[in-house]
Image (cartoon, rainbow, N blue to C red; front, side, top):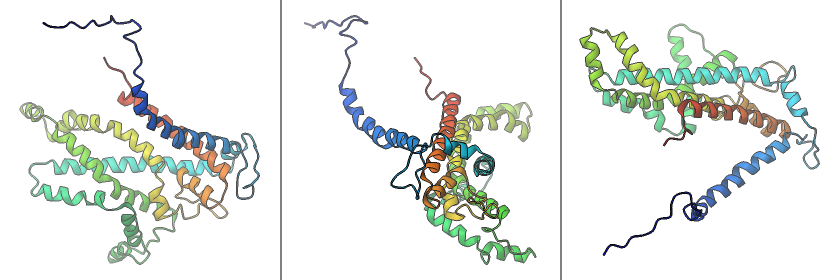
Length: 312
């Protein structure tokens, strides 16, 4: 005989009983978030309103919004550094995605012989250790390095890549491209291979040329795949300090007497404030500003991608 189990109707107190075991599983995550994210953020926010520094290390006091006033005042390092940060963010993102997309289209061409070998070779920069790659490129950019040697073959004078403003910025963009293009090449290649072949066959029947096929099919499909990555990449490059610190350390100096370099971004300048200038309160203020800028980018990314959109 089948036994019928009574199920309380929806909306009754028994049907809405809280399952406390879920909080037990979430406990470690919530505690870690509190200890390693929320509390450090609140402490950084507090420090940003103080004169905490090497000269006020033991006894420091609240100074209100003075650090923020100094940041946005005339003659501050903020606006010149922000200008290069935006240039770095947009330039790196455009180069990384553009080159990755171009290589993906070449590798997706079935007429390209041995394209699997090329794909393997082109992905090698992604597999090498980050620090090792940067050190290799530092040697390549040396005043007596291979790059200047090759340039001399064409009658071009040696370039001091890491100690002149223009060449140093170009060197960083090139190095960051080398480190980043394999990821976007892989993503775009996956997007290209997911495009149904029937679409191309239909455009061939309509007499479309290669450019029309790219406009109507290839580019829209790739754009749909990489749109979330574009905003994510912009946010990442905005706070990308590692490659700059390891290659140029923000140098060369922006102008005589400046306490920031021509290749400093907001992230690397904040790094200098704490490890070189020892201005911990000012560093905290920069960190809060960087946080809110990145938070805004994250919110925009969530809106564009619908990451937090609830579905039935």
